[in-house]
Length: 62
Image (cartoon, rainbow, N blue to C red; front, top):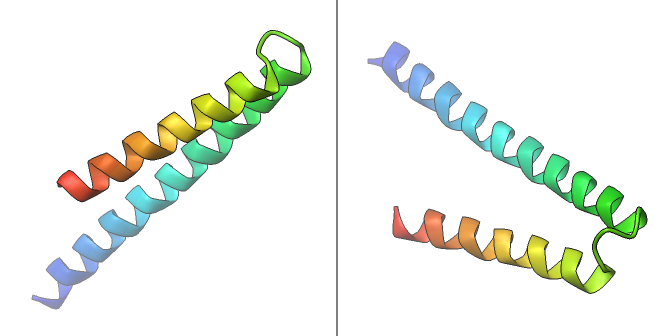
């Protein structure tokens, strides 16, 4: 049973790590787009905020 618990733990931690990495990458890309002037700073912040709300809704609905 311990092997199964370890596997589940590793899967969950991997998922959390990927989500954090993806979030950081999205924020980095949005920042670059804002810096290039293709998106206003306000639009970039609103986009990131909307992603955070979606993430929170997904986590609470599961």
